[in-house]
Length: 120
Image 1 (cartoon, rainbow, N blue to C red):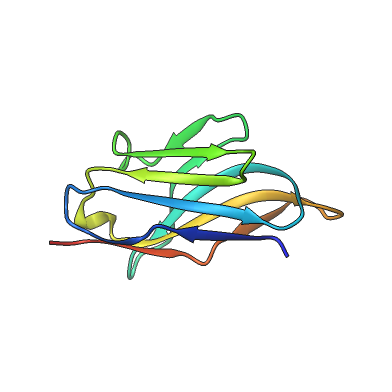
Image 2: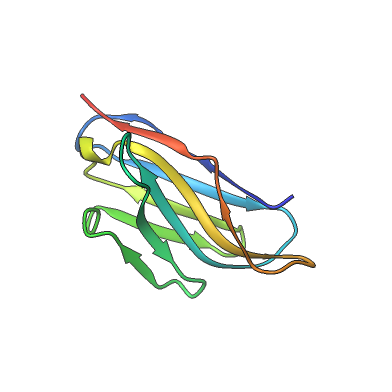
């Protein structure tokens, strides 16, 4: 079964750092774009950062200069390094990826989400 599993969320004080990780598992031939989304209470899910299979990145304006997305194609992982965290970064963070499983077509997959809370 193809799936994405996030880890690394938690409680951090304003100005602190957290690193989220997401690992893909299952019979996967190719992982194309990988992304991190977040959803705060009462708000729509928003794209935070994305990275292509070649390593090109894009960020939401609200996190530019503070967050860094990276991936390891051999390990089938994508990370999100979050620095200078603010209370408004509080949300459930979701990993998302376009993946080509064995004997199937390309599909979009979501992780289960990990809570990040920024509070003093």
